Length: 373
Ligand SMILES: *Cc1c(COP(=O)(O)O)cnc(C)c1O
Image (cartoon, rainbow, N blue to C red; front, side, top):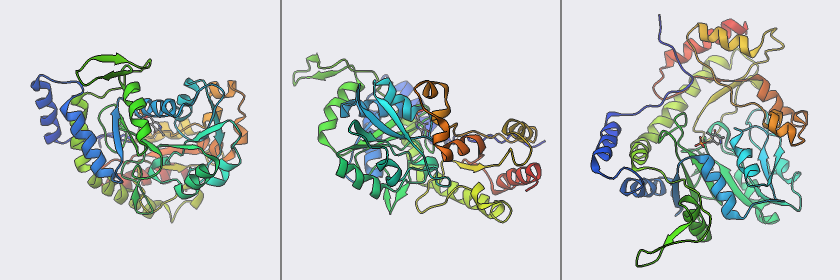
């Protein structure tokens, strides 16, 4: 009996575990020196002279950034129809409207052309999502945003270590929000980071992150806004420092595993089924499209059959306009045919740094056998 192969699993080394224990023994366990060290390490890694703020989640980071932009009631933010629901939820939570655009079928990413068609006088920002770690074509989006005076908030939850034309995501552009959720390319268990260059964002973000508080030179506390509570702990930051040290190695291994998936699957399945590769891809996920209806089966049955063989699959993601809340907001999911097809046909195959090439073979053998492709 072989071990169960989950679709993802974090790799935490002994040095990181020891660093966590040291923080727990230090007498200071919430935000402190390790958070400051983690922010410096992230700024050094990403480059581009960016400011970095870490927080309890990428979702919190996206919401804080939109708030710092002044997005609120009556505003619109353009969001891909294919992403995790958080990308749109953060917009709606501020009383603004998430306006969906369809994605390309193989990259699962938005394009400048699709965004431009959705711009109205109420549009305040656009949120590119670098799906699975493949960079959106940012040159077009940034040019469009400058022309229309829009903010650009990258949902970079999948994209720590992703490069676009040789530059790391988060080292250029307006604001990027990374996730360090346990399933992402690096983790702080739960956590996230914003990178940005605009100095005008630092104060509103710092206040929003911690109760609206600013201290004067003598250390007296005053509250300038009804801020939130999104600060990361030193325990979590110690995990993040250990993860960041190995990120390039993790992502190199992810690329090797993805290359092996291509080598096994490309000769056998229609090219539409496989995700788009690209320069600088960080391979957060390897998600394929399976035409379940055409094969006379369902995704539920396929996932159950793979599980029988000891292989766990994920679904990333349902089309957002198809979710009950967004249908209730008046969206017709059939208006986003690529996102709708991806939502119906996508399955995420196992991909994480501790996997072997033999694990990839096992997944491919099971997939090809069950689908008869
Ligand atoms: C994981 C994820 C998020 C949310 O990240 P958290 O850190 O869990 O808040 C947002 N967007 C996308 C695309 C994600 O995959």
